[in-house]
Length: 274
Image (cartoon, rainbow, N blue to C red):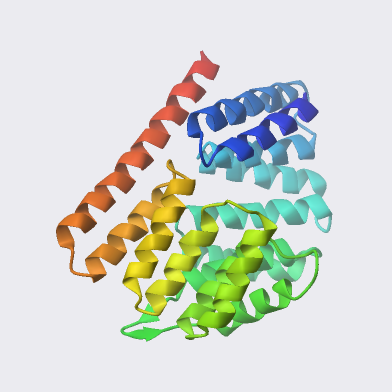
């Protein structure tokens, strides 16, 4: 059952950009299988970890955090899986928008994990997202910059998001050519994801090239029609361009997508419970 759940979760990940409903069906089917395994024996930490990952996909973040915490306790300190679970708890805080709490959590745990790259990744991302500007001054937290520069220089250790985050930081520093090279690397790593044109749009915003930013963000929303992030950022850029009515329309579109995503999840999870 655990292996079947893993396959279903991977299928969901492959579908989520273009077919959100199909992805949710896969994620919820994986959830039901993992909950059945957990019902039979709740002492298998890998099951609790996998269940947490699926619950994140279904936007059940509080439940996901509970599963990661329990899995970490079952493993005991110093194991690879417990370190991954701790990083996932931090990531849930980040997904909730609790940047300060996430930073505090990471600082408490960084000295207690052996495999620290996943937790340091969340820590660096939280720092970067929490400190963007101060007035009209763009901010770059050196600890975040150093992590992303280090991890992207080590072969086989970086993920696509590392290149994207570093590109965005370079955009704040007006290092646009280097940012473009990083985004090319990110695209080569996983072609066709919406995150690369999205971050390209953020870099263009830092360069005050709002027309180019809109083109990049439009590509991002085409790659992921059910992802609200591109529409929300489109609204932000349109507002910066003085196009208030268009900005409001884009924000409404982002909110509409969020509501539709939530409705699809609620309907599918409810059907599974019935």
